[in-house]
Image (tube, rainbow, N blue to C red):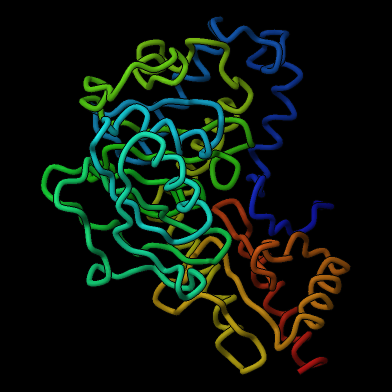
Length: 362
């Protein structure tokens, strides 16, 4: 019987229990080598197998075409905010950004260090409660790329589908909080990046999926470690990589495949989220903060009728084993982060607790 609580943390977030059990074993001795994964050389045969399997499984999950590189980098998604324009946005050129929250705003700030940024759409005037529609999006005449954040952890909104791009432009996506939560057509993108700590693994490793032709046209001279081409040429091992993070990410990839791949994962995620949204929509007590058509499957954000009740709910929930439900400090309220590895029974249990809390305080 597990003594673990239900962990609704937005990140670092819940990991699949079978993956954690494998890690317990392999920290001590991986593959009968007599050495644990934390101690193996990143250039040895054991780690060769670890990173090769991780890439192969990543490609299988996402049906990633052969003309895309899979990179395992460091620095989190925040480093990608500047690496993308540094590598891909030439001086004097324009990139279009869709502003749907704190993370896209930070990406916009970094991109302005390298070129012109055109904000093609924004939901800031409604506290980022919605995803702009195609009719609300106005791209510039000739952008190099269009950047968007597919899921917004702080405000609980998610793109239903990737935005369109003008002819000649490519898509760039920060998919940190919903990568591999549903089917994705990688061929529509020039670059996808995702910090691992929400849906893929531990903090400290960042997945980058990059179309090969973009390696051939660097925008400017850069330090060696900031060039995508450096990491592509060296198989993500130009320097010592986050080897344990890559190992765990590889195990999560295998777990996703064992669940039935992205179609099965998406069905599971939709069902989990619906359990909570049904409670939120079932009475006037709860106030979901995202507009219905923009709601996230990964982060369910909501409030009670008042801040005092919000605090009481979070405190009572923690006593019952529902952890990290407090909303982001910038917006308040509550946030239930239910990434791929979050168990369906946790959503059922939270829904029951919410109904009981309403009955006592409504």
